[in-house]
Length: 83
Image 1 (cartoon, one colour):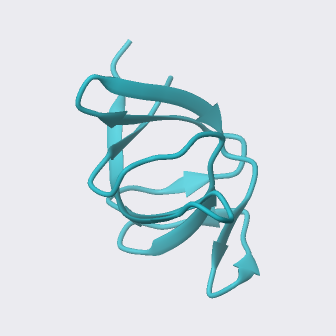
Image 2 (cartoon, rainbow, N blue to C red):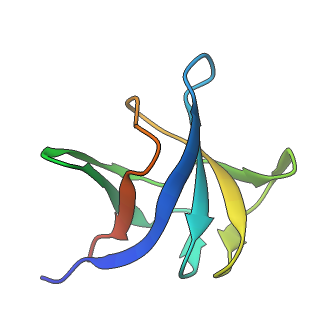
């Protein structure tokens, strides 16, 4: 199983549990992703993502999205799509 890097966390809003992710590949609702920061990592399914406060179903490479996350995540954490 090879995980594909799809982006990096640019910012994290701890009060609302949202990570801003700069995408290097496409992402859609329902995809399973993994956040990796050093030896810390966790997986979740994409349930909610937004661009400019608008809910979206999918995002393309090059976009920055707001992603609701299950756990706190640090700036610079890498994001992978899990098969």
